[in-house]
Length: 429
View (cartoon, rainbow, N blue to C red):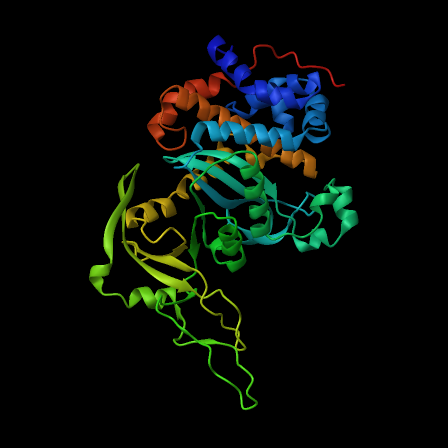
């Protein structure tokens, strides 16, 4: 099979800004080959089958390109950020924080440990990558995939050095810390968005929410049902004194309540049915209640409870299946309820993106053990997905990931871009 000339040229045009920072001529030759391999109909996209498909007999060269060759990762990520901004960025975009896990056997691959694996829904041996996704109108484009290193790795510098973890990444950071670092990076690179969205795995952290607020960002996050809040009328009692005349710590004049308690106490008419988008099986609807509260994440009291913090919206969701979900958001007080709900629900496109990165582009197929190899493979997968979204938008298709019909329309393009015009691969230098 031969690549249609128009699509071959489109890929070359897409890669021009990346080629400028890839540096060595051989890396510029291998990059489109690898992308075409990722976009091919191969079932397995680890290095061995990719090499057999795009450059038979030249596995060593392909392995060197991905796992050994030095790249300017920060500059390539900056180019990817500019491409994402051009496609879907702006004042109506959302930035989605999440993570994705790769189940693994053994303990030699970088970052592998027994930890929660979202794919399996339980604690298992896996790698976890923190992700950022920029989306608009349910069209997602990947921005970042950064490996989370558990404490058992960062506590062993020799183990990190042996697997090629850069010195600047050997200090332990939580997933929330990694997410904030990546948000800072993409903002420096010019990415614009209106709101940061995350699930309860991130939203349950007061430090994460405060970090976003400190940066002047609007956020909308999931929280557990036990998250404590106060009413907006809460007052602090500050004139209490001890027997010695010393002023005591101020205390709230009301008891904290969980978000589940405060929302379930609302009368039925406060729960309204809303449709936030149309899915493949029709409109997606649930019943929502929205109200203003003070989140209990201020200073800590002697009993371990917290003073009232920022005034925010609390959102409750009741699905027809009986499932209950809860959210907090610092949207301005005048924001409409439907806008808040739609922003909260924008996280769906990230889940679809992760699925397609794995199923279509082999994100989780990489079998190397090194830090560099894993991050190079992940960056190439993000470049391939961004290219496919570029093709879709240029063709007037409403996103590669949003409508099955749209994906069927783009599939001839998807697969025709997978075979290089020439299978003669460049020599290793």
